[in-house]
Image 1 (cartoon, one colour):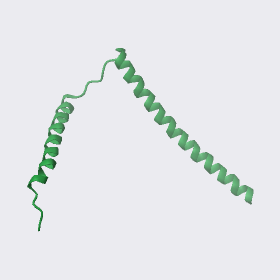
Image 2: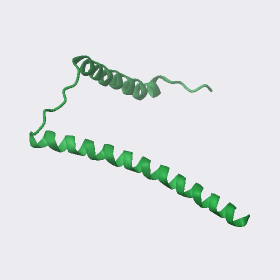
Image 3: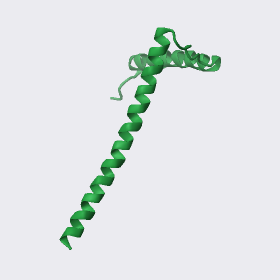
Image 4: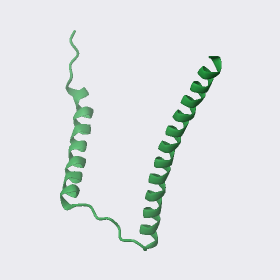
Length: 84
């Protein structure tokens, strides 16, 4: 009986290790693909992927909104009056 429990425990740990290894493989494959694309773009072997004009517009609007938000946070302290 003890041998069966040990065998089942070993099988479970083997299965969990196999699942972890498959996730590591997926992550490594993704990183390799991105590094390959970046290298090809820098060496001129591939065209750089252009962003959509609408995305560029949203990016600019986000930067402007971020600037206003940071200004509001900075200036809020100047107008707050503590309650006595």
